[in-house]
Image 1 (cartoon, rainbow, N blue to C red):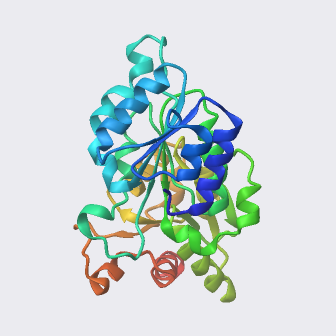
Image 2: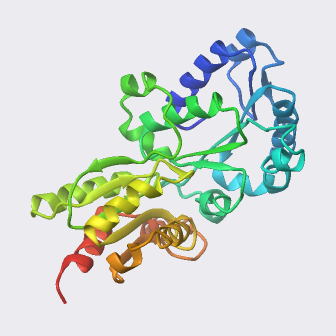
Length: 317
């Protein structure tokens, strides 16, 4: 089941609301199997490709499958089923079929799971036409986007959840979250000193950094894109054109989501001139993730690193 337990409550509500929703995972609650039946809640062997392949077939016949991949790293195991088939079935069938399915998984956290089980691969899937990618920075948005994904009529949705969101979960607000449209960024703080765009688990660090900077009189515009595909280019571009400075904050590698976001933003007329090179990244090193707690700690987007990045851009040389 999902590490963010409140998502299980949302999923249970959606199973109850829509008889077409089915759930596949290597671990499922006995109470769900008893309530909804083995035909809708399926405990699967550890074979992610088989789970996603079965979900694709179910989606093409009109069901709304949800597959819990457990760890985000396991998304690499289902590249063929997801990228070559589910993401392209609408195009390949000339619109005759769609694959409205949801894949959930947990991204990174301070868990010392090492280079194979603790990755942020969403940047890889941003370059896959037909796949939508959600990386919420709060538990409430995670619940809202799960509702949206389950009610979506289009292609597959990848929902990446940071385990750390559970540490700051407002359960009442999360359970009450209404469906949130994809492609709408959340402005967490307003300011003109710089634009700070934080993704997923890095949002928390960026929030603390923005608060620390505000105490010094430096007000930054802090945005959480919530979904990377579709991406709210308009909201981020408006901010960057106003502040003239951009700090990208992510717990994944710089060559992943930050690079793709920046590439897209630079297509906005006038944005490159407005930035004038005032761009900074706070992201993971381009090396495998170590299991050692001491070494792993060097990967995180900390408030101190975000504050330092903003200061580099705002301090006159």
